[in-house]
Image (spheres, helix red, strand yellow):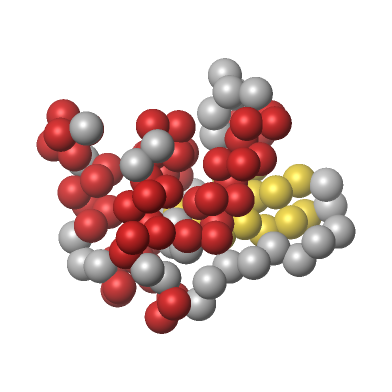
Length: 104
């Protein structure tokens, strides 16, 4: 199985995070993970085709928004809130808030 690339916290770029969260499906994933709990990828958004979600997982992972962990054939996801808050204080709070939803 291929190794999953996760950028180091210091290498996370604002433009990549904003581009990743600028898509409605990926923003919904971030909101679904905002509790901090690790979730199996198949339970995050069940109404989107698996083939589409594979692309969205990659964009979110490579931008530094989520971390994926493989256990057997399953992938578990967590929001990289600590890393993102350290790099861009307040960004996630704004983007994931009700005000952020109204702005989009």
